[in-house]
Length: 75
Picture 1 (tube, rainbow, N blue to C red):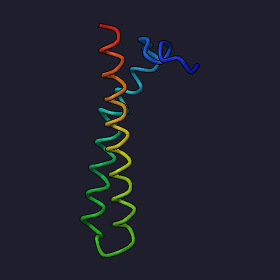
Picture 2: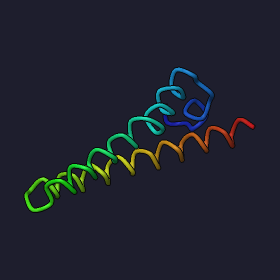
Picture 3: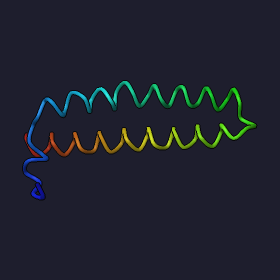
């Protein structure tokens, strides 16, 4: 479990959900949070929206980084 080899192997059961998360869910969360923040910027909702945006972008970057590592390792 602590060796990198199993984590960097091509597993479609892991790659497909990660691609869907980074390509569909994260942009959707960012779009909706930005719209909510614009609609109600004066209340406490703005901080929650900013947190959601940061978390979604972080997840997308980490996911794409992981997929890049898998791609480089297996090419």
